[in-house]
Image (cartoon, rainbow, N blue to C red; front, side, top):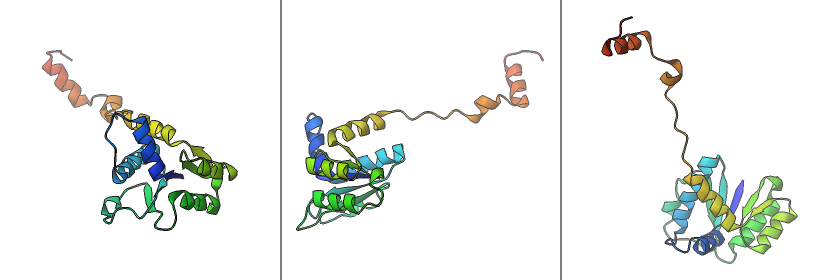
Length: 158
């Protein structure tokens, strides 16, 4: 499972992709969802604060659970608690460039990935072309009636 420091990733994207328009937290979640689907992964993203008043844009995002830290705490603390509470920390990957979270992950033997690196991998994966499925007929060949039709069409006698 991958746990992402949401605002940390958003800030990293601005640094890395300074030519492109900034993306919103909702757009980010949908992009991550597409990535998780492509790599057959699931995860969580945690943002600071309470988030937008209308959270309906976050509904039905597949492969990704969205959390807001709320008032009186921050995303780093929430993620740190998730790392501490994990019964299988070696299966966790923490996405953040924050030294505190990277150290917390390392102390529990979880993997940590800097936000810029994660974003680069995500973009590479989403740019890959999906393999085109060959039609089954290509492997099976033509049926007898189709062969006869083509032979007649080209004027070839059997």
